Amino acid sequence: MKFAPISDRLSGLGAAKWAVHVEGLRRANLGEPIIMLSIGEPDLPPPLGVLDAASAAMRKGRTRYAHGQGEPRTLSAIANHLTRRSGLTVSPEQVLYTAGTQNGLCTALLTLAQTGDEVLVPDPYYATYEGLVAASGAKFVPVATRPEDNFHVTAEAIERAITKQTKVLLLNTPSNPTGAVLSRDEIDQIGAVCERHDLWIICDEVYADMTFDAPFCSPFDRPRLRHRTLAVSSISKSHALPGFRAGWVASDPSVTPRLVLVAEAMLFGSQPFIEDALAVALNEKHPEVERLRHAFRQRAETLVDAFSGSEYISARMPEGGMFVMLDIRRTKLSGEEFAWRLLETENITVMPGESFGRGGAGHIRIALTVDAEVLGRACSRIRQLAEKLCAEAG
Ligand SMILES: Cc1ncc(COP(=O)(O)O)c(C=O)c1O
Image (cartoon, rainbow, N blue to C red; front, side):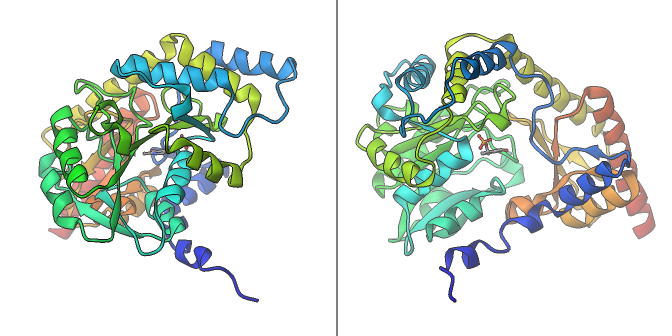
């Protein structure tokens, strides 16, 4: 019996990246005092009003099949949310409801790309992107960024990577893992390249509500770029509800019906009570959203302070999101080696930078998902380990 090539293409792209996290979790479940800084799961509570909406909807019988594109109320809530953000009208016909950002990205890539195409991705990139592109059959083409540029991708680097096969640019702003937030000028310059080469842009905006000083900008909010952009997001991070699997893809009205076909092949509808909750999440103001953003910003500042003056580790303040990249290149260890040593000797899990592509080499990624006191303790231990390793190495 023969399998289709998709699972061969995907094998090896998933589990290895998360090995430190999985081992840390195993030990934590055995009762070991592990500080988990390896996964992007908001630790503060979600808005009560959204939980209440889900529970009330379930009791009202909203547990049956929902419409494949999403229910009108949900699509309006998402469209209004995106309209408020940019001032440019988004209509419900431009929105597909999805089971979170990951599902939205997969739907978008399957709709736009296939074997023989190339997808450009700024490197470092979110750990699932290689698998997403591989699932479509297209070739994953990383575009290098530099720590010295705060990992901002440039229009020139994108243009240099373009070939006749290039079909899609997959952007992520604010970025996981780097915290880079693309400015409006950068988006416009990158967009001009995409116009010149007629590329689609898929923009993963799952951290859009979590920028610190730099204002968020999406190519979907730029009038010249909107028709070639698919904006993908969810309430997983903004509202601390990753388990709801509730998100969307916004696109040109001509794109949506095609996305719906692909989405229906996978899920054929969603959970109506979760759709109702998403509508409440987006239609009403919830102080928890601002609280989360504020907490991540404060924790990032605590972390950056904790490494100031360190001889071996430097931390750059992220511009948004919920992670900090620590530059450990002066320890001469790889991110992978350093992450395993942290788990073995300090009971701390972090993600090796290499899990996010070659651009993450020599870094570890810290998730800001514990309170400032625990984070402070973890930082001291990370700093000490770096000093110990460098003293040993002479
Ligand atoms: C950049 C990025 N995209 C997508 C996702 C997945 O989001 P969702 O829970 O909405 O599927 C994550 C989750 O960590 C992420 O960091």
